[in-house]
Figure (spheres, rainbow, N blue to C red):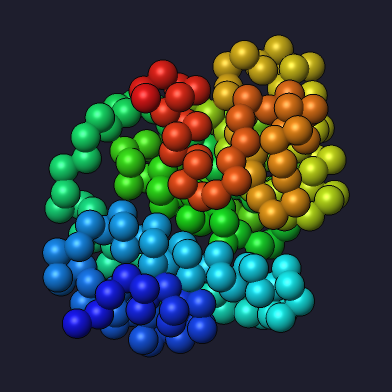
Length: 214
């Protein structure tokens, strides 16, 4: 009988087929889908990320990790659709996207966590500019903007985004949260963001707190 630790192991080892099969088996056993996602898939991705930081993995490994996760997550989402979510934040809409970079593994995980917790998520994808976030936020009437930041030039662009929202007189309309490999709480505060998350699941707690649905 498979265990969540087995899923974490094969995701960390970038074994796509095995990860898919174990995900299905764990869910068939009746395990909590969120636990499967957080303790299995996400922790496996974190293991890949730690190897990368220790220079024991390369960028293609991170990309492969994202592919493995995307293979497994639909099964988790399907299982969650059968579970009643408590305290669903009706009507709260969140815009999410990656600033500049093509890397969107973290952004995709945050998007998934927000969706399965009842938020209406508008996913802009990757390679966005500050003006893109502003235009889409205005178009979609969102309550929050969530920005994934993966490299230093993108950090500067997030600062431009908060400045742009202020200059256009709409800063108070949107809560802005940030996260990503090269971010931290001190930096987030310095650019005027409303919140920062170290992990994908932190986005849910921030959203609930800042949008008054905690």
